[in-house]
Image (cartoon, rainbow, N blue to C red; front, side):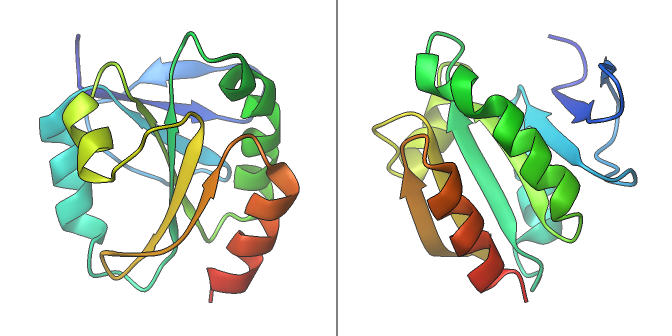
Amino acid sequence: MGSGYSSYQNQGSSFFAAPEVVPSAPSTILTFHSKTAWKAHWETYKNSTKLMVINFTASWCGPCRTIEPAIKALAAKFTDVIFVKIDVDELMSVSEEWKVQTMPTFVLVKKGMEVNKVVGAKKDELERKIERHRF
């Protein structure tokens, strides 16, 4: 409902919905709630050399909830990386496009193409792959 996405900022515990995707603050994780908002974001960044980490998650997924603080920490550490969170139940068609079958799945994207993937709540593996692909 509402604006189509939300943004978590790792500065205290603020959580808000916003009308535009504006990743201006450090450790921003963009969360999309509509396919329209996701497509607009994708069109903006699909040709970018900037690394995008798409976190496919679900509210009922225990490992997804367990790794969430680590993802927030990675977003704070790697402010040059775009972190996106997509709930597979809200945007099933997007998760199908990326062939996601297990949660959490982290798809690393550059220039519109998948450059790597981490399946499962594997923080250390995710961090290594972000380090490898961020430049």
